[in-house]
Image (cartoon, rainbow, N blue to C red; front, side, top):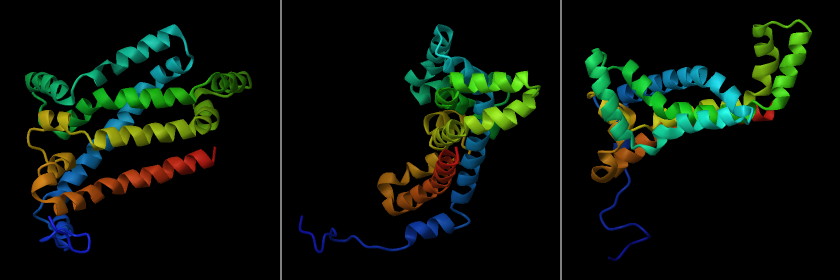
Length: 224
């Protein structure tokens, strides 16, 4: 097929995709808001749950390695299959089709990534510093604020970034659990072939929070 100036015949550039994203009736803003709320809640909850496990895995003990394997097992199962199984449980409990259940379902995939990334920061040096602070009379909150958090800040920032991205882009579990709740990944996929301009504009929306978190993670690494 002949091309003119590197552009296929019939191809044209316009702002139709951006107009769709900005339109109040498109549902893009609602889908992005839902995805952001679910990803934020899932990431923060995963960090709290993964913190003790990450400390244990960071010690490089046999128990820590076994624990990580157990946490990583869901990663070998397709997200849609996991979502279908979880959907059955949530239906029996009467809590299906809500943002809360979506956030909980995303934990299956967010926790392993957050846990492994956090474990990188929990080295023997962190434990030595915490022990020294404890001997000097520092309480648990003081040690967390003055010793642990600043020391593992780069790993913590990377864990938050990775956890958010995993949840933010989760398609399979959102499709199985959501019950029709608008989510950004579910909105993008149907346009991928039918309306590539709209899909491209929605993909730009995908990048905005991710790029912001990348900047935060990079800043945390520089100020270590």
